[in-house]
Amino acid sequence: MKTFNAAIVGLGFGAEFIPIYQRHPRANMYAICQRDKKKLDAVGDAFGVQRRYTSYADLLRDKDVDFVHINTPIPDHAAMTTAALEAGKHVACTVPMATSVEDCRKIVELSARKGKKYMMMETVVYSREFLYLQELYKKGELGKLQFLQASHQQDMDGWPGYWPGLPPMHYATHCVGPVLGLPRADAEVVSCFGSGTIREEMIPIYGSPFAVETAHIKLRGTDLSARIIRSLFDVARQYRESIDVYGSKKAFEWPLVEGEDAVLHTAKRAEHEIPERVKVPDYAHLLPEGIRPFTTKGVYDMAENEHLSFTQGGGHGGSHPHLVHEFLMALAEDREPWPNAKQSANWTCVGILAHESALAGGELKRLPDWSFTA
Ligand SMILES: NC(=O)c1ccc[n+]([C@@H]2O[C@H](COP(=O)([O-])OP(=O)(O)OC[C@H]3O[C@@H](n4cnc5c(N)ncnc54)[C@H](O)[C@@H]3O)[C@@H](O)[C@H]2O)c1
Image 1: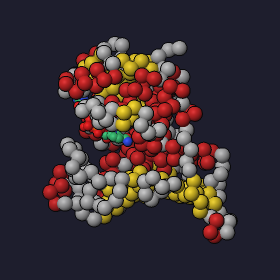
Image 2: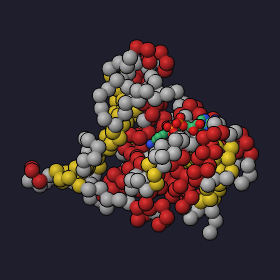
Image 3: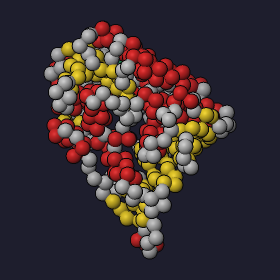
Image 4: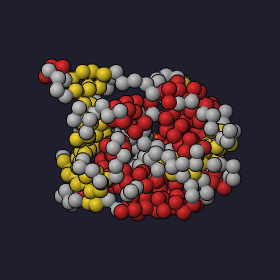
C-alpha cells in the first residue's frame, strides 16, 4: 500500500495533526517546519519526528516530501501554497486559501497546471454536526432545502499579529463552507452589510470599521440563498461556529450555547412536538481504526509540554482526523479532494468579495467564472 510523506509547516495549530498522520495507514509523518529552532526541536522530540526544517525553502527542496500541510498565519497561505505547487508538492492548507481573489485564481491555475492536488482544510465541513446534516440531506429526510444560514462569532481580543482589525469576512470559510457544502453548490453572487464599529485604534489597520458583517449569498444553479454572520471584535458572544438548515420536512438548528444539544424540527406535527433535541452521533466509523479516537476529546494530552499546550482530540467538531483522511485518500485514489482548489477558491472569494461589498454599501458582487465547478 503506497504511503505519502507528510510535511507540516507551522506548529501551533499544525502540531495537532502530527499524531493523526502518524496513525493513518496512508501517511508517513516525515517532516516538520517552523522558524524557531527551539520549538521545532521540542515538537520533533515530543512526537519523534526526525526530519526538521527551519527554512520552508529548504523543505520544498526535499525530494522526499510528497505534500505539505500549511498551518502558518493567514497572510502567508497564498505564497506558501504557490511555492509548494511550483516545487511539485501536493498542498493541504488551513483556512482561508488566500486573502485576494487574484491569489485564489493563481492557486487554482497552478494546481491544475502542475497536476498537484490542493485541499483547503475547512474544519466545519468535517465536523460531526455537518456530517450528521449531510447524512439527513442525502437520505432525503430534510425534504427540499429552502434556506441555510451560518455564523462564526469569536472574540479575538488579545490575539497577536494579523488579527486586530481583520475584516470579519476575511475569515469567513467556517460559515461559507457549510452553507455551500451541504447542497454542493457554488456561490454566484454575494451582498454584504457592515454593522457597528470596532475600537478606533483598530480601524486603520485594515481600513475596516465593522464589528459585524452579514452577507447573503445566491447559490448558483439553485433557487437557494444563504445568510452568513461574522464578528471578531467588540461583540459580546461566546465562541460559536454554527449552521442552521431549513428543509420542507425537517430543519436543523445548531445549539445556541456550546455543550447543549442541537434542535431538529419536523414539519406537520403538533406544535409542541415540532422541535426535539438531538444527540449528534460520532462519525468515527468512517475513519481507519487508528485515527478514530481523534474524533473525541482528550485522546492525546500535551498540556504539560510548554510548547504544545493542547489536549488533542475532538477539536473543531472532531473534524481533524476526517480532514487528514479525506486528503490522504484523494492522494491514494488519485481523485480530487473535497473541497478541491476551485471549491476552496469559491468559498474563500465569497468572504473577500463580501467585505468589498460591505465597503460599497451592500453592492452585489459576482463570483469569478473560473471559481465555478460546473
Ligand atoms: N478551525 C480552523 O480551521 C483553525 C483553527 C486554528 C487555527 N487555524 C489557522 O491555522 C493557522 C495557524 O494558526 P495558529 O493559531 O497555530 O497560529 P500561530 O501564530 O500560533 O502559529 C503559526 C505557526 O507558523 C509558524 N510559521 C510562521 N511563519 C513561518 C514560516 N515562514 N516558515 C515556517 N513556519 C512559520 C510559526 O512559527 C508558528 O509555529 C492560521 O492560519 C489559522 O487561521 C485554523
